[in-house]
Length: 174
Image (cartoon, rainbow, N blue to C red; front, side, top):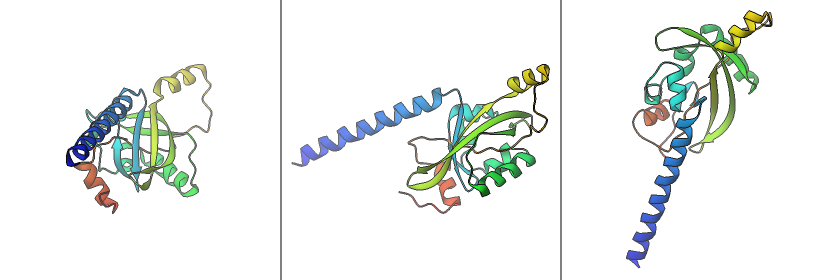
């Protein structure tokens, strides 16, 4: 009986690792940056998100205040307004890369459950080329401005900075 139970645990563990690896591969293969955050703190992000902002690995961002480090002051204000209105529409923002350069970005976010808690998942893409093409054609709306950004990363890993990030927002280990 113990042997059968032990075999079942090994099978389930292998299935879990396979599922996590499939998800990690899909997340890291994404062409769009994706992050998960709660109360401004980045809980997780994919590789595309990290690289979009000039970082080598997502772990460099986990546990940081994404709004403070990754957005212009105007974009932070727009995001706060959007959050107060509980809106989740796509927004244009001004992102700030690790080296301090600014770029035009578009984000979209949704509320999700992450490890049993409410959080936001955000997709983010660089729209610099699109904005440049619009300007060259003279088709940029006069009221266009940087608006909002949220950031996230989904993965099965639960260690290191991710735990530190959760403790910053008073989440306990599951």
